[in-house]
Each structure stands twice: as C-alpha cells, then as structure tokens.
Length: 298
Ligand SMILES: Cc1cc2nc3c(=O)[nH]c(=O)nc-3n(C[C@H](O)[C@H](O)[C@H](O)COP(=O)(O)OP(=O)(O)OC[C@H]3O[C@@H](n4cnc5c(N)ncnc54)[C@H](O)[C@@H]3O)c2cc1C
Image (cartoon, rainbow, N blue to C red; front, side):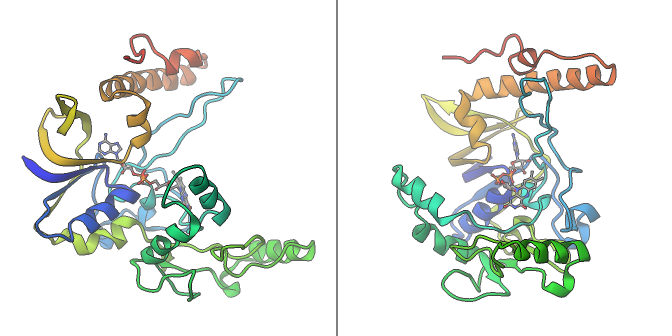
C-alpha cells in the first residue's frame, strides 16, 4: 500500500490534520490509530460521549516516572480515534498571551499570541461571545455554563471568590482574563465534542481518506536515512511520501528502534510492577524505567 501522507495517531491533532489534508482530493491520506473507531455519536460508548468528566476506559495505561519516595502516578493517554479529545475534561481554555509571546521571543517564529489567535478562532464557534478573540464558523462548539446551570457548590465558590476580591470573569478566553467564572468548554448537550466528532465527520466520506483503527504503528521505515513509510505491529509496511507522528515526544527522545525497544520492555516492566503491587512488594524505579537492554543507541 502507498499513500501521499500517513498520519500516525488519530488523536486531537491527527483528526484535524486528516480532515484538513484530505480537503485536496488529489492527496491520498491514511490516518492510523491503535485504538478503536466509533464513527458516529450513536456508536460512542456512554462514557466517551459524556462530557461531565474525563474517562479512562480507553487508555494506554502509562505510568509517570516515580518520585523520590517511589510513588508512581498514572499518566492518562487515550487510545481511540479522537485521542485525548475523546476522553478529556473539555476545558477549552487558551494559554496566556504572555506565554505565547515569550515562546516567540525565544526564537519560535509564528508562535506569538497575535499569530496563533487566528487559528484558535478558526477552530471554534463560540456561542457566548463574538469579536476579535472568538470564532464563529469553526467546527468545535464552545460554551460556558450560565449561572442557572451551576450547582450550589459552584455558585457558592464563585460568590466567595468574588467576595474576597477576585474579579469575576465572564470569559476566560479574553486575553487578559484572570479571575473566577465559568470555564469555556467544548461540550454540547452534555456530549464531549472531540476532534473525532467535529473534524472527522466531513472527511470520512472522502475517497482519498482512509482511517485504519486498531492498527498499532511499530516503527518508521527508513532508507538511506530518509523516511519511506511505517511498519505496523503486524509487520505490514505502508509507504508514504510524508509522515506525521502524534507521539513526537517519544520520537524526539531517541532513534525509533530504541523507542520501539523501550516501549516493549516498558510494557513488560509495567506488568511486573502491577503484579508486585498486588503482592505488596516494591519495585526499584531505576529498574522500571531503564530495564536491562534498553540503553540509548548512539
Ligand atoms: C484525562 C485528561 C484530561 C484532559 N483534560 C483537558 C482539558 O480539559 N482541556 C484541555 O485543553 N486539555 C486536556 N487534556 C490534554 C489534551 O487532551 C491533550 O493535550 C491533547 O488531547 C493531546 O493531543 P495530541 O493530538 O497531541 O495527542 P492525543 O490526543 O493523545 O492522540 C494521540 C493518538 O495517537 C495514538 N497512538 C499513539 N501511539 C500510537 C501508535 N504507535 N500507533 C498508532 N496510534 C498511536 C493514540 O492512541 C492516540 O489516539 C487532558 C488530557 C487527559 C489525559
């Protein structure tokens, strides 16, 4: 199989990329996802649809590196089409403009707040606010709970914060907003509006977009130091002219073969940890994260 672009991971970003890149009918796009795909709202498991709280039913089960006391925290990462946008808290709050400007000043062109603002606006339809800081034609609906939807505790919390001097903020996505008020959320009628539900539907019918769910990418194929495609865990090789990886952090950390090696070894060590926990014994953190045979390759 050969495609123009293969996108590894149909997460928050992957679904957007697949939708946008497949707008060009001449470009053949493949979106590969390790977890399952629920193409329509009616097929979504209840917890994936329910925007009231995050869910861990579709999760990789990662553990964060332990602290000095050996405490190991879970590190939730979703494993399904939509990625973490299908399981997360739906807080649609933008970063502080000063942070974006700071990143730009450090030498990252295009990352100043003024430069990223059009993209924030483009992805959303804010049903509460219009103007320069809000979008009105994007696929992701944004709204805030009005006072009558807040429960007693939430209302009392806001009232107490205002009473002690925090400013009331009706719109946390206004650039200088600091204070207390309802959180902007990407939820509609109680449903979590993931990128799978907002960006992918228009693209699914396109003949130039293929979605492969239940397909774990095992490695990037290289030839003479250049990427030629990917290899799935089943051994199937897919050639591509361009490759977009969701798990950039792991990719950056080391050569891809090393990543695959660590991933496999990590899974074994994690299972060992869970077993040992059940039996009440402890596991050396150094041993968990740097198991024998996974030293980085030069
Ligand atoms: C519990 C939780 C709550 C959160 N709440 C909020 C919130 O309220 N507001 C907010 O702004 N952010 C929130 N976040 C953070 C936000 O959801 C993430 O930062 C964002 O979704 C990351 O997007 P991504 O595209 O980088 O990765 P992801 O959305 O994680 O997508 C990565 C995808 O790649 C797939 N994948 C990984 N490896 C492979 C492989 N080898 N082969 C094939 N597929 C693979 C995964 O299965 C996944 O679908 C939350 C995150 C979590 C975990």
